[in-house]
Length: 460
Image (cartoon, rainbow, N blue to C red):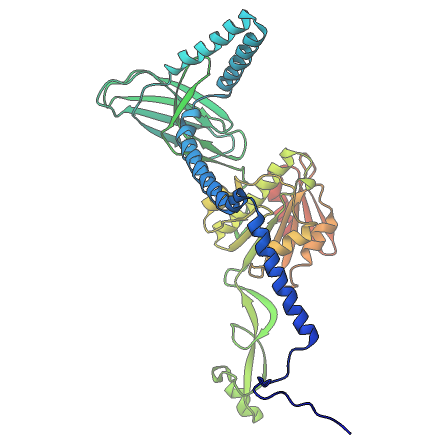
């Protein structure tokens, strides 16, 4: 018999299922942890409660200090720039000798420190003063061939309303430095200085900027003012005049016929049956009437001449600088003749793609070429990357030094299609001009620039 216990009258009735034992224990543990944290915070020292606010205040002060220091450095930096390396060395020596003299009791060191500081103080008087000049730098001519004479002219005019003091102007010219002493000038008076520019080697020679210098004779302090912008002098490479039409290698004037078959062009190839979509202008009506079906013309595709010169500047392929300069002259001579013939040409090297819109632009860019260590693993990869976005050439020329193997010339040739005629040029100073052939690729060896005409004539 089962006995059911009833709750007493008036007792609250449970609405739903009550909490289990595990849920009740977890709630009690959470309440206990919360109370423990509150007791721990009340037990902290008073000064620890200010740590977060103190950290924010210190960070704010640090930002203000950094801002003030940066602004102060911006103000002091131009003033400290007038102290030369020699001036800083003298100042450091004065401090070292002064400290050593006081610590060791040596008056000689103290006197030496005072003398060095006095020298710095005296040098300060030499940097005061202000000049107002108008300076003009001219190079005549602006473009010369290596070995030709080039002259420079510097014109200095006093733009102040009173007589100027003597001044010293420095003018960097290439790797050298020219110094000119400008005498006192009356208002609007001018002073002219002439100088010669060395042009023994192909290069881009920069003249300027012209700066006036104020300072002491010992060079402790030095204040400069810039008056002009740099001016460039282009020393073009030596070139040889070749026969017209790219020295006989590019003979077509209106386009070169290829083996590619197309539906519209000017070189007739054959007839074929009409297909839907063919242009009716090319229907051969006489043959269509004789055969009883529509026949259309087919053509061989013609392309306008496009020449690509692949020039390697990798120093691995050259014995010395003279061999590299000969290679630049060969490349420039070939590109020069092609541009004069009106044929499109692209010239690429590891450093840059030369501008070929005009002859002057091409020669200017050739002045900037220098031997480098190629970032490409081999000449084929260099040629592939350099010509990736160029139009397919009808003639490709490869120019490199005597240390480049013939197999690398052959590897570059394989990049171009069967419709491309490829030739190579190797420079070897003093070598007998000769023509070699490897699997149909002709490679000419050039010992001096005068040999280029003979080699090209044999290739054509």
